[in-house]
Structures are given as C-alpha cells and as structure tokens.
Image 1 (tube, one colour):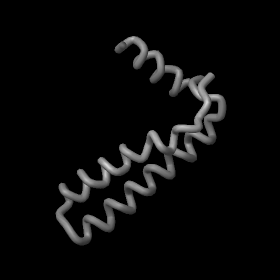
Image 2 (cartoon, one colour):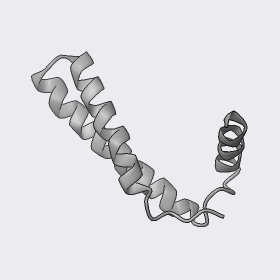
Image 3 (cartoon, one colour):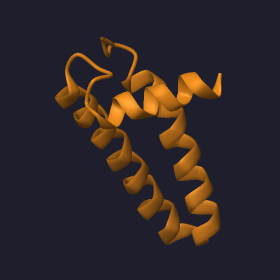
Image 4 (cartoon, helix red, strand yellow):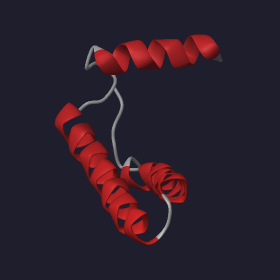
Length: 73
C-alpha cells in the first residue's frame, strides 16, 4: 500500500500521473482558493485555530469532488 502511494507521488511530481496536468493544477488551485477564502472569513469572526480546522476540513472534503473527472495515464 505504501509502495503504491510512493509511486503515485513520484509520478505526480514527474507530471506523468494525469493525462492533462493543467486541469489538475486548475482544480487544485480552485480548492486552495476556496479553503483560503473560508479561512479568511472565519478568522475574522472566530479564532485562528478554529478557522484553520474548518477551512482545512472543507478544503479537504472538496478535493474528491474537484478531482472526480480527472483522467489518469
């Protein structure tokens, strides 16, 4: 299992894991931007640790939805 994760990480950084790497970067940027905006809004109204936890959870939960249509090689 760990070998599969290691291989996937290596292929990702060699830009050989996905058929269209530009789409991957776009979807990743969308997820990061949404998490960042959520963090900024929550940080204004709550404490930083709570804002970071909620934004991290929502950003992480959003990634499978954003990556559902990506094609692997």
